[in-house]
Length: 449
Image 1 (cartoon, rainbow, N blue to C red):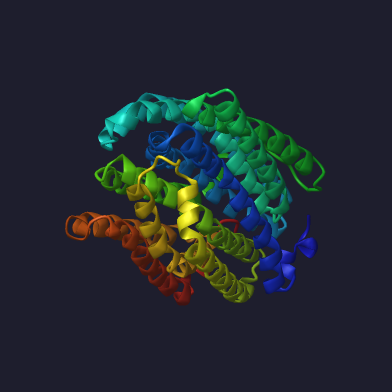
Image 2 (cartoon, rainbow, N blue to C red; image 1 turned 135 degrees about the vertical axis):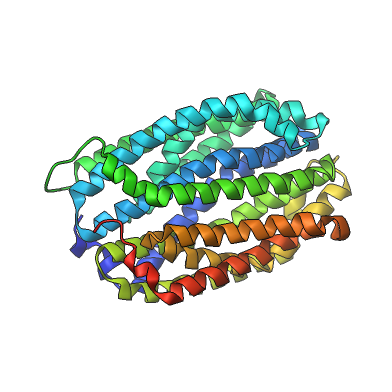
């Protein structure tokens, strides 16, 4: 694992971005099968209220998942910069430090989640007819939080190393296992919403253990010079320079989603079910776009570490071309199949209101995914460079504007403003990030000097 063998810092930038981003795109798509499997099977085998319960729980689970995502971002930037600089012993120490830290954090958050899940559901005005099922789903989900955290952070570590095919393989395995267990627990055992939660927990546990074992084997075979420590407070501090703003950003975004979900809940369980179905499609659709942004972050970090910032411009243009093509494909698919796709998440007894709500949301956002892509690619440069403050500000602009638009206009425009608020906020965040990128000041934010 040397600079000479690392195509992210020595190869053609376009080829490097494509070869690295494509496995990440596929990996993120398979990751969404966790939620899609729950929603499709729950919606069809258990019913509309159960689907609404899963949807009401989703924004809460995301609040905790975002801590793992944010910490993974901090780890991946430092690891990528050490890899680009050829400091393999420091890179390995960073990985050890990251794994220990995230495990401790996940245990603490697991117990916090178990305690506060019902109060948060009530605070969100979750309808009484789905409150108990939502609580059941959340409590089982929280018991699996440490495995979810470890799996996501290990995936971030492999991506930071430029090994994006490895997380893809584990995610395919995990997703297929999740689907099989969903069908078994819900259809064969008639376990209802508990079955969906247990299926996810078991799949995450097995995947976390296997991916951890493979990572240890991979690191053992990697040559290095110098001492490797089990834990380093200094490297933890460096990771936290990116991880804390990223975690705050991700967590605040999740708080924003909680506020959006609260607005959605005011329209009743049928609207919640339709909105949930649309959000599952929305999450699946934006995963390739997010993957390209993450690839841009890793590309930036490795080249910053190798002191080859001039390559980043070519990588950025490559990422924009990729998300333009991806956005066009997604729009075409949604435009043609939006009604049958939304209907697939709902059982035959679901009302037309649920279907209409889902179709309305996805019809608006599908035309604007290009803005989501531009935002992610631009913010990817800031994150990869370690320019965490401006990355955080850009993300907060997106969140704050979205919540402000929804709560300011929902009384006059109704539910349609929930859909329009997202693309408006994406565009605003993109413009803010672009101004910072064009300034060039992010080039002086390396974390491994």
